[in-house]
Amino acid sequence: MGLQITTLSENTAGLGNFLGEWGLSILVETAGLKILFDTGQSISASHNADLLGIELGRINRIVLSHGHYDHTGGLRNILHRIKGLHQMRKEIEIIAHPDIWQAKYAAGQDEARYIGIPFHRQTLESLGARFNLTKKPVRINDNIITSGEIPMVTDYEEIEPSLVVKEGKRFKPDKLLDDQALIITTKAGLVVILGCAHRGIINTLYHARKLTGVKTIYMVLGGCHLIAATEERIWLTIAALKELGVQRLGVSHCTGPVASAIMAQEFGDRFFSNNAGTRIKG
Image (cartoon, rainbow, N blue to C red; front, top):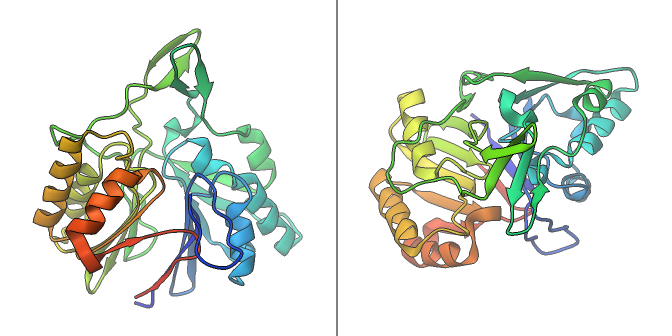
């Protein structure tokens, strides 16, 4: 299976004129299929795609890892690209969990800040978005599947208590049930692409193995959400990654500098920083 994975948006950028921006967007290309996993915060995915000669208008599907602004903020711009290329109205399937449309906030000491999708659903649908909202995994082809809801089974991975949803005038903890990954089965093993892994990177990998029946994890890419993790959790995560036999680890976005540095030391040449402009062929 010819596979190419290109990171279009991430906090940091590679050499050249690539634009770094808090958020994430990763393009998966295989056998005539182009899947965009998340869309970044605003214009970075489109800007960097242009530098790489990637025509975003030819995307077949969009998968959203969850409903936070830094993974969905580029959506309107990309839909404009798709519509502009095809001139006539073209619908594009967007695979996501129903909870992406919850009113998501980050609770601070004084006030809560809105961090959900920055567009109305009707606006996106007027641009050709066709939302496939489901809690279950979606099989895109024989080798690619979304994770659907991820069970939380480890005793050390948890969702940050500052992440909440607003219902009426009240806030309640966000369970982030919409958090999902993209799982690719290759000859070398599983490639698991994470958005933020709010429900835990290890929980996600356990779920990927169970879902596919494939035990070997070749590569893990994306945000690991260890930016606010305790040192104990970081070390427990690293121990689990080693036990799982992860062969390549490319971290992004919300992994955090402390966790990234420790992972780099522990995994050596199996580790890399997966920043904007990174291209992987397999």
